[in-house]
Amino acid sequence: MTAPPHGAHPSGPGRGLPDTQQGMRRRNLARVMHTVRAEGPLSRATVASRIGLTRAAVSTLVDELIRAGLLEELGPERPGRVGRPGSALAVSGQGPAGIGAEIGVDHLAVCAVDLRGVVRARAVRHGTNRGRPPRPVLAELTALVGEVVAEAERSGLRPAGLAVAVPGLVGRDARTVVRAPNLGWHDTDLAPHLPDGMPLTVDNEANFGALAELWLGDGALHEFLHVSAEIGIGGAVVVEGRLLRGTHGFAGELGHVPVRPEGPPCACGGRGCLEQYAGEEAVLRAAGLAPGENGVEVLAERAAQGDKGVRRALRDAGIALGIALTGAVNLLDPEAVVLGGALAALAPWLVPSLERELAERTAGPACTVSVSRLGSEGPLLGAAHSVVRAVLDDPAALSGRA
Image (cartoon, rainbow, N blue to C red; front, top):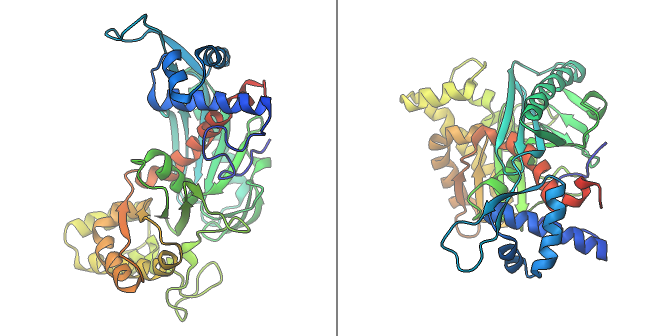
């Protein structure tokens, strides 16, 4: 079973549901879930005042969510409140969980996140996936998913869906990798090779990283460019709190924006792409270091120690990033550029030259450049939380009473 593409999910509680009595009930269930998750523990009366429904209506909704295992009662509210204390409600720490997975060029990772947003299980395998056929890679990923699901189920959780982050272009069907140059995959439908029995969504790793920043960041940004890196460089655009996907769903392919059109050939078929100047392997080469595992850690360590060659390579990578980002910043006028993924660890040496390029090249005021606190965890967490958000946005669909 395949879920709708992420980003097509409602951007708020219950948005996008039909305007019928049944649709209204589903929207209200979502409003209750989001309110309790954001502000809980809360009593029924407090929830009713927050969302503008009667206490009786909220009690009916809450009872349904408790029966579905989505909310739980913790007992009387804290003392000191005026009037008879109500029973405090919280999002359940058991029940549905989002399973997130990431296929990286040099690793596989899987995690389970409960409805409270807590990571409850995790598994990682390091090793190159470049040039490997999809079938053995997906078999290994399936084994990791099985490990994580088994551990989550021992904690009273059950998987509500699987979301997979990949370093490449994903079709509108949210299951087919159209092209992943750094893996060597083309037109690969992942669904037949992954665990059956739970909804599946596949998306670009930068998109999931941007969603993680939107949902798990400080909440201040709603329009930004998110740039992340592993071996390649990915980008995602968030406008008014939603991903901008483009006609074919490929918006944000920053890594293949030409920086120098006469430059070296790229795996995508173009020349002089940003990845050839600011990707991990490109920076290692420019610093005189051999590509290998833990390349970002090596670069960060050497830069911190004052290695002039590494610092020069990172400065030049920042210049290339600034050139590539200038057009997007001029076109979209975002609140900020957010550096995530491996770029977050290298930010102290990338950001100064990146900011100078943006300041000199953009038409409007200088764009703020910030660093994601999620770092390389962003895509994996974004994938898992996308499943959680789908449950919160339409809890009735999971309870089978839609």
